[in-house]
Structures are given as C-alpha cells and as structure tokens.
Length: 264
Image (tube, rainbow, N blue to C red; front, side, top):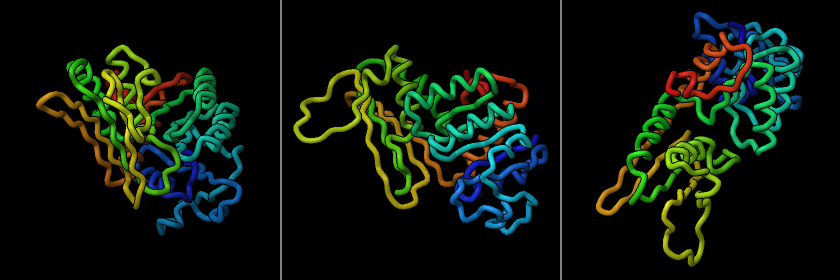
C-alpha cells in the first residue's frame, strides 16, 4: 500500500514516517508539508537520519501517486487535502481535530466519493476506553455526575480536545442525549449547585504532555474513574496504519476507529 503523510516535518509527521517505514506491507510514496515549510526539498527521513528517497513537497497533485493519505495537521490544511484526495481518488485517514460544523460536513461529502477514517484519536487504547465508557454510562445512568478532564502540551490549539469531546459524546449517546444539550464547558464565579444530567469539562495546557484523559462518574459514597494516558505519539501512528489498511477494501464511506477495530 502506497501512503502519503501530511505535515511531514512536524512531530506527528515524523512519527508517522518512522512508523510507516517499519510496516512490511506499506511504502512511503508522498511526503507533504505547507508551502512555507523550511523542510521542502529535503528527504522525508532526514530528521530521522534515514534516506527514504522521497522528497518533501507542497504539491497536492503528488497525491495521485498514493493509495491513502494520513493527515494529522490543522483543519484548514486538511480541508485542502480532502479536495485533492477526492480529485485523485486517494483514500484518507484524518486524525486532525478542531473542525467546525462546516468542516465536518465537508468530510461527510467527501466520504461519498472516497473511503475516509475520521477519528479524534487513532490510539487503540483510547478506542477501547471509549467502549468502556459506553458500558459504564449505560450502567451509571442515574445518581452519578460526570466530569471529563483532559491535559495536553502547551502547543495544542483546540480545547477541549477531540478525544475529550468524543468521550462526552459517547456518554451522552448512551443516555439518549445530545452532548450539545447537556455539556457544561466552563465554570467561573458563583455558579450555583451542579445540575443533574450534565457533563462537565476541564482542560489543562502545559509543557510537553502528550495526552491525558479521565472520565469521572461521581456518585454518593463512591467515584469511578476511567483514564487513558499517552506517553508517546507512537500509539496514534500505529492506529493510523491500521486505519489505512482498513480502507484498503473501502472505495467510499465514512468510518471511525470503532469500525476499524470491529467494536461497532
């Protein structure tokens, strides 16, 4: 399978390339970066001390050489990549977070033409955690207050994280609710007593935290905590390779990691 990697000079891009080069059934065909990147023209493996023979480019037409693009960049960049993937019939794995409603609608439209895996977190462990949350929420559907905590590095630009939002959505759906209707995004000042049936969110940004997520189910006399902590971006890269393989047999359609892992 011939893969393209977006954001090739970034931390996640380099991790994706390093992981890809270890896959016996995959090859690096294209390495993309933005037009102002100082890495343009360099070998995609230069930062890793590896000669891949693939030069980093900003030319989206190069996607015609790839079966699938893996993209962990920014919404504005990913939306341009989506258009190019549709034009060149290149499948797409999207790990980018922070899309607004229009961006999500664009992904859904593109999935009518090409196969797309779109997930806020590609980690196998995170997606196992989401399944555990679904079960817990169905059991603890009354008498428990739910709070979701997440922490990431100081450079992350969106909050709450896509994974935290997905955790909230899974719990809300298990309760037969929409997260938009029951989420509490911020607390400040005299807020009054906590309302029943709400899901609260809290966020930390600092240092080089890769990603911590905890869902609290707080009852009277007990508290259940379901936590996932990431210590390396390698888990996201490994999961995205599984997602790309999954798309090998999908000409079109929109899928998440629950589908990739057979957890649906």
